[in-house]
Length: 297
Image 1 (tube, rainbow, N blue to C red):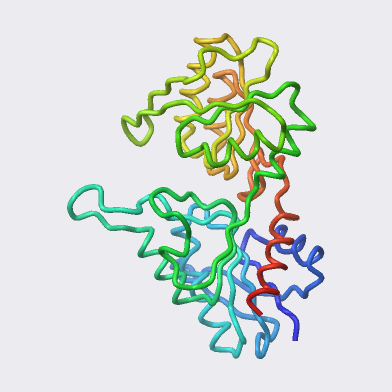
Image 2 (image 1 turned 180 degrees about the vertical axis):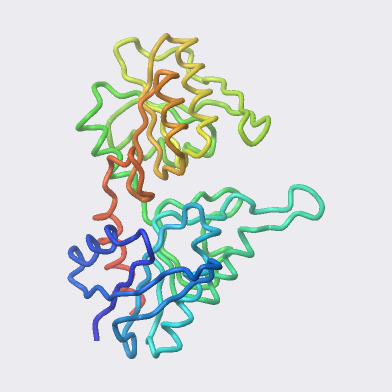
């Protein structure tokens, strides 16, 4: 029997588009909270004997993870053949080592939770630091898809003479690939983190051509501190206002407004629903998911 796709709350639009692109069936999952905020779930469509795919992007994960784990367990208990997770944004990748005595290594703890609940995982551009791949911390098959081609296509269509800039060394893995796909020059700045929302940026390039459009590219925008500092340095050094692009937009309206006041427009993908999501990566997810499901069948 074919796969059955169930969106977790607030993931219905993404699920509907994936269903259309993949040609699979969408199931209905009833979800609500009791007055004391405990979760109620009910599968309105029968999972028995089917491959169940749960759709849930995991921004602000602490309110989402319990319903998601309950849904995975219920699907298995109701006879699902396999239970997979599609999460365009995968959370808890930041704390991947014990920096100070006594700290929880939450990326490993979260990976253990997901690996016990699901048979496989598909995500987009996870924020890898010291781990080279998800396979180092997840014990289930995983597939990491890339938003780079969709971002490069958006830049080609919307930016005149782009000059791509990564705000730190970690961003090089995204910036270089997108720049090559755009046929654009690129560089990476040097970042010194002074705190959760306090950073110092130093551009490595001596200057950016005055006729170029600076494009800051990072995988995540949350507080916006890194991008705002990069915007400040660009304006002080070159007098240019950049476009800021992030794969995963975790920021709120105040962050977007602060970037706008600093002189930068913000564009993100729709891995996390938000007003800045102009770059569509659903076709990337659909194609990668179809290939992954074929290989893992």
